[in-house]
Image (tube, rainbow, N blue to C red; front, top):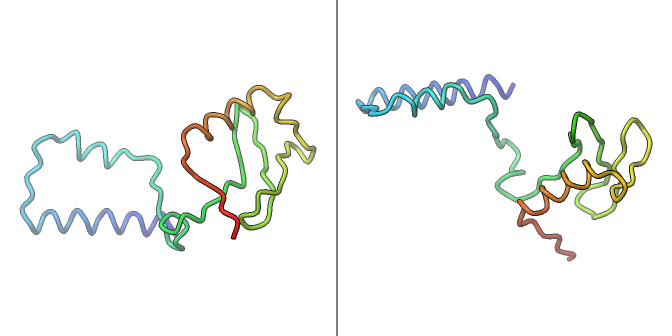
Amino acid sequence: GIPLCVTISLASGCSSMVSQHVLVRRIAAVETLGSASVICTDKTGTLTEGKMRATKLWAAGEYFDISGIGFEPIGAITNAQSAVDCASNPTLRSTLLAGLLCSNATIDSE
């Protein structure tokens, strides 16, 4: 799976650096790479083609499901199979606002 692919990629990169006699001045740079706990990989073009959508959300210790089909701006946010009103849930609203402010995504209708 993906963890195996990432491990092989990192090992391959390390071998490539060794064969080129790379000198690491600051060991912290190598330690940072080794201590990474989340690595985003892209097998299907979702990142490179800009076709990624959220299906789950975690806010203030609660998990939410995001429904919708494809990339249509139609769907609902549910928590334990019941619809959630985003306007009346301050933690969910602030999490969505933070995501909005950190994103430059747009919806283009064709």
